[in-house]
Length: 214
Length: 398
Image 1 (cartoon, chains in turn yellow, orange):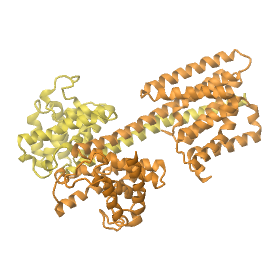
Image 2 (cartoon, one colour; image 1 turned 135 degrees about the vertical axis):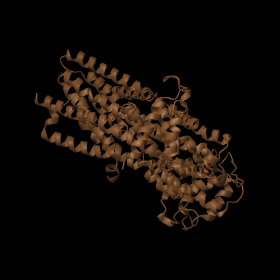
Image 3 (cartoon, one colour; image 1 turned 45 degrees about the horizontal axis):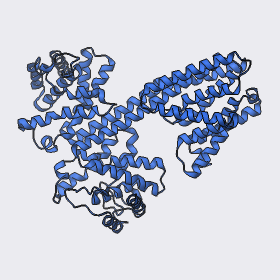
Image 4 (cartoon, one colour; image 1 turned 90 degrees about the vertical axis):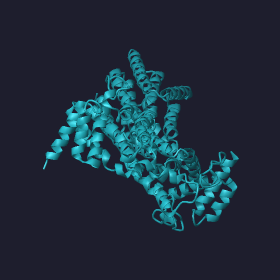
């Protein structure tokens, strides 16, 4: 009887240790590794296009706040954050000089269309990577206009995460290059056509609160 | 002995041997004298030491061989050759099925294994005593379930082995006493070990895939680089092995060489593809690809060591390289290896394809080797060039 108790106690201790490791330690390590990789992608984009430096952190922070306000749960907020950080992975295919030597105000229609290809390229890259494929659709649609939206289940329609990403990206971009007032105006004018009205409303509300903060 | 202790399985085996000696001395082991427990607790550690020592002497770096061979050896002594052959075949079949790539297959197999174990133990409980073949079958089921776990993924190999020893010993002890409920309970944690191994595999796959994504980004920016990177990586690995580096280290150099030009993502492709000579400003811009590559990979904790090699893969032993002008042994050996492989491929464009760089016609391999011999000691490390020559000759011969 004593021996049986000894063995069962030993087995129990081993099982508890393995359970803790499998469900509490391993997922944290795996997530940390993926976060590292996503940061590496962002760093690559920022090195290629220095005028994008710091943009991703600001957009990601704003997107999380907007997502929370629109009722996204922890899992979807996490996916939104990851998709925002991966959104510009396709910029590696955009000509270096187009972004670094010319102002976007000077781009021709053709050059603008070339630039906008980065969303599709990014989606294609992510689709070929099983570990990141779940973010491909959001990345592909992160510049899609709201008027394309039909149904959440329609693959040709930008999902909520993509709509949030679009609103946040364009707000931050306009705020950086033309000022906050013009950025807010851009979102207000585009609500319902370029941007999801709910996203527009939340971005403007949060931006306004940031501005009012002393 | 140092080589044995340097390996996880070696350390575990030494620890296991000490444990079993203590059990023998205390008389406890005799109370559990059954073939399965004898094989597991008493024979395995000694055989594992022998395998670890021979693996170190023969420079075999296969963790599966080091850990499975002692199991099979112990089974051979305890249960005889036919059961050992059966276990080996069952194990191979389970391995190939598990590695078919569908994670759910592992769960189905694990559930099947558990069901078999429960049925066998329940059947045996009706018998007066456990026949050896029943214990052997139960052992086989446990071993199949743990086959994946023996690979050091997710948990250190030593922890896996210790957990295996404890669980199979408990199973054997319970089964030998007819305590079939205890036997089933002892078997349950094996599913956790398989789960850990599966999760470790998924994490490793995800890591490889993210590196692949980085390589894809570079390929989008500079399409010609892909085959160049593959060739440089392959020859760099062979050179590292010729220099006496371990297979693990050489594999790391392979991974680093595949990423050595990742910094070119941030370089103007029109300058990289320029057919004429670069202006000083353009050359300074291109030189940035080395520190840029390091900056990208430094974001990934487990690649920080590789990042340093990539930062320095254009340094020269005579100190005239970039970005920091390091010389001699200040340059990591791995960076010196990549430098040689990179330069050779840049000169030749590969052994067969002869891909043309926009600014130079490709050389023959013989002419390129002459150039490298001429620059040995100045632009390239002499010892690395010698090892590289052997690798090239082997490649040409094949």
